[in-house]
Image (tube, rainbow, N blue to C red; front, side, top):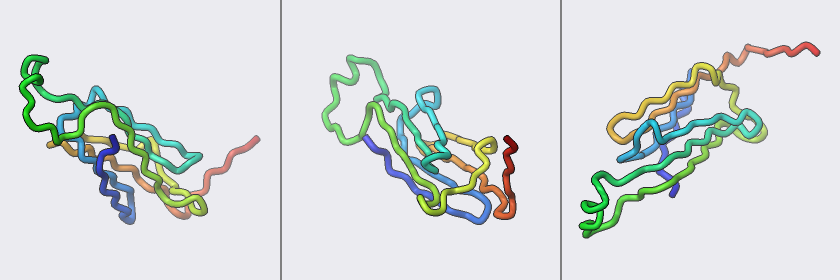
Length: 113
């Protein structure tokens, strides 16, 4: 399934919040693709309780199981310039909040060959 997301584009950072009720941080993975200017979040959301308890499920509305959500930051023409090393993630009250600082617009990375 594809969890719902809110993406905030502030002056200093991108903030992404994903709705993941029932998720545990040990089952989540976050990756940044500079080539695609894309954040990828994947993992698994489980139902609470043991197998016997789950057999008593009378109404099945929550999404559980494996998921992957990709969020493009910036655009193909103007990809996001972010500081991946400063990326933080926090899972609290069923919301995964990822914050990625933007690089200074005046910052230029020079690579010598």
